[in-house]
Image: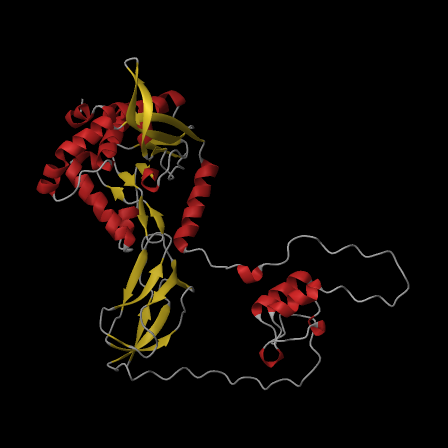
Length: 407
């Protein structure tokens, strides 16, 4: 009995996905609930399990195809073994070969030409009938098409006229050295949201620098004991999350969003933390981060990182968020202007820590300095508040004792 493998519900407001990978081939055996195919949406990847044990009978969509909720991806012949491959669906008989005829000028209808050569012919309006194929079976290759481009045009037999314009002197086609791939749903969604942020918000960025010395000393002094007690390392991100929350409490408009003609102030602190996944940057959310200890934050952030690399983040992990923190310093970034994560009105950019000469009490000393950037929606947040918000974070990081005591 054939059992259908259907596209399951993908989450709120998501109706389509792309077939990312088939884990089994047609005819191979599968066990019930075994991950059979990976679907990619604009937010997460989803493993579709086998609804029954047996052998794959048909595969209706290949990798890269778009599918919608409810589409039948394929069928499983329940109870069949790996060797019991279902018969291939009957295909329509191939049409009889047409009588030999002179090649038509159109490259798209000529089956004696390679795809790369066809592209060159179409882009340069070459006459296929003038090309002599040197490939297998007389097939026209890329070299044949490029050779035609380099040959001078035959002399005209018509009465002399004004000389034809010279061929363009631009670079020759490089189709043989290009690769064309479709954007993944996640990358398309990122592109849409970045464009949305640039189009719908008045983005401005302010900068400051923070001396990381005190936090680094605190971390060095207590990291071993912290790890022994909580089973996780004491990182910098939890300090910045805590500092951001203190600043958000002082400047609530940075924790708000514009909705039509209204401003919605959020009295909770769901902090998005950008992490690297297997398909790009994603932003899972620390819910009610103001209620979490530093250890809780580090555990959750570490878990986000592991699940992001294994494509195990869920839609709930990624939805919502009132403020975002992005740490480009992990990749060596010195300074950047982060883009807002709509509909949020603020995002904090962290960068790498570099020892720099600074003035302290009239003396030049070497200190570990990090540049900070706050991008914000100027429609709601004035420059004064943005600067003071960043200064508040700077004060908390440079005096972590005050941060831990919440003063």
